[in-house]
Image (tube, rainbow, N blue to C red; front, side, top):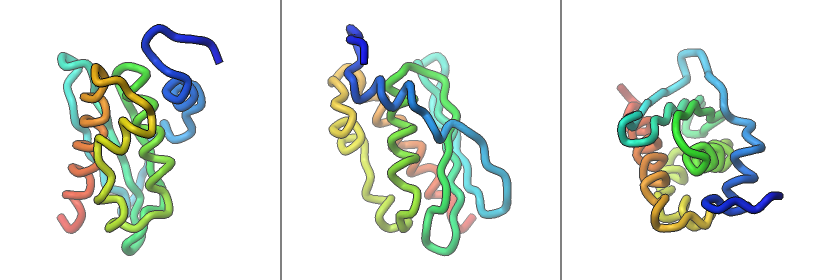
Amino acid sequence: MMKHPIYNEIVLSYFFNTKQADSLQGGSVLSAMVGSPAQGGVLKLQLQISGDQIKNAVFKAYGNAALIAAAEYLCETVIGLSIAAVQNINAADIAAVLSLPRSLFSTALLVEDTLKTVLGKRGE
């Protein structure tokens, strides 16, 4: 993998190997979009839920490579997990896995906020 002045190899690997950048349709799909182009990023996250388990997770993102990598990591991680397990995922965990520098921590916060917003729609 090539060296990049801002992004590490972990971020670049998720960024260049996205599998979950997609859209879902159907009644068991919950969606949320959080962020602002003016603030540097927008993330739409969709979770397909069956019972108490996440069957699929996809995203659409407008932002930097770290945002796309963080969204990809999140989607890959939550598939197959229970809602209870997913509720414990936070920005610090995402930033640690991706080795994000402090200057990109807001990216992990955006992903966490989007996840919490989607989960908050459960039962609506």
